[in-house]
Image 1 (cartoon, rainbow, N blue to C red):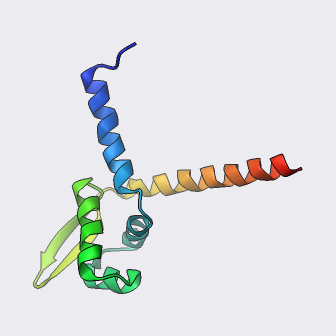
Image 2: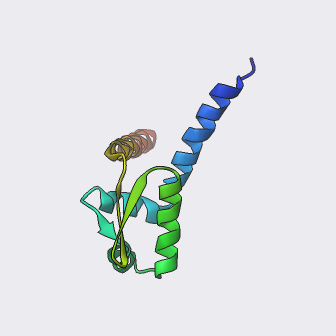
Image 3: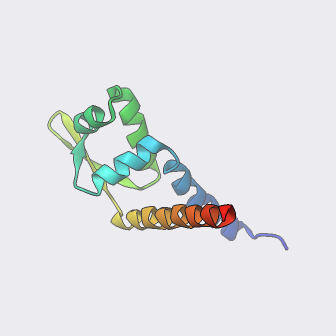
Amino acid sequence: MTVNNQVKQKYEARARIIKAMGHPTRLFIVDELSKGERCVCELRDMIGADISTVSKHLSVLKQAGIVGDEKRGLQVWYNLRVPCILNFFGCVEDVLKANVAQARKAIT
């Protein structure tokens, strides 16, 4: 069975979004933005990295369509474009719990 081009493009698009989430700092940023919008300077202070590193992470999330931004004066404020991305976190937590349960079961 071969995968047609439309189906392939759909999975590639999904992979880009998942890949954008595939870094601990970016997961932290998404989690922080779930609490409300943040400016780059706030995120920089929370993460403890230089502004260019934080900006790069935000750029990856923005290109994937996960975050949006709004320039206000000299600052850029970021927010979650689609808050349902947080459902992904819940699913990840369920997998982690299942893994722990499986590991405990294997020990006993």
